[in-house]
Length: 374
Image 1 (cartoon, rainbow, N blue to C red):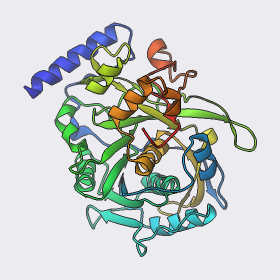
Image 2: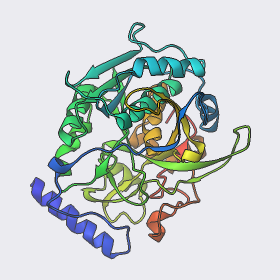
Image 3: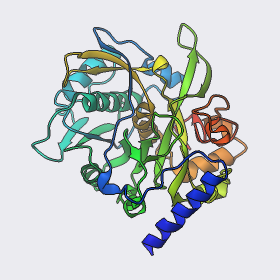
Image 4: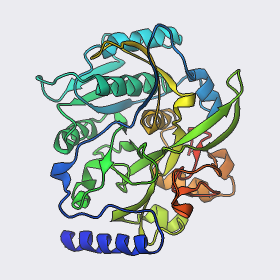
């Protein structure tokens, strides 16, 4: 039965592609065993002696998020070992007057899936971004960093399974992704936490195109936007970011929450992203990192990888940012209480599927947050 579902989904995706949708990858030879997660992160500056970029207080103001708060544990899933993450987080917290988050005070826990895990400079930067900004957005929540031995699909899923088995984990951030694969439906169950954790994943940074695991129907896919700011950091406007991933799945059928909302032109398949967040390196985030390269110190980075941990923090703040709630909120008459509707910008040349517009679009989804209560 499972193989029949996959075949049906692939056939449906071919029909969509023939109707003018963005291109989709359909190749039976590419399977889960070939999957390797890649962090969608873009570096604007590196090796600085002081932080540069949008500050936690400014992004909170832009998205109407509280100055403090958070409850439960935010699980961060990354690959390789960021050996200096606790020290780096301490320097980041000091720069922005954030509460200390350490192993000693119980705020930070690092779990290595294998004791022989190596370090990797690129993944260390991603890990620092995820941990530092999840803590900045929800400083009273705990942070659980789960480090997979490598970014293979099997190792990343093992790390996810560990986080999902924890009763204290309320949200899971996955700031990485890769192409869809023909047997992906077999792995959707990994994103259903035993204790109700909600999963968030980056939609990708290469423009139009679908990324797994963001496309899994139990995962909230996070796309990207660009912020136009005044010199003082006040928001002027928000538009779709050209790198934001999105489109129609080749394999996943449309989930009930999208059917009820009536996502346009999905042709019965899963649409991504679900939501959006600032991802443009031009309005990037300051990150402190000292593992793995000669260019250590302060970085300024962007990418949809920044949105996944911050949306996971939004969940820790309000405990209500679920897929069902968010699609219902967007459809309500009070939608502007919940989302900023992103209606300009694009991520490619595929016309309808690449252009932001009112209501739902395949670049920014439902829009960017305006609350933590959905």
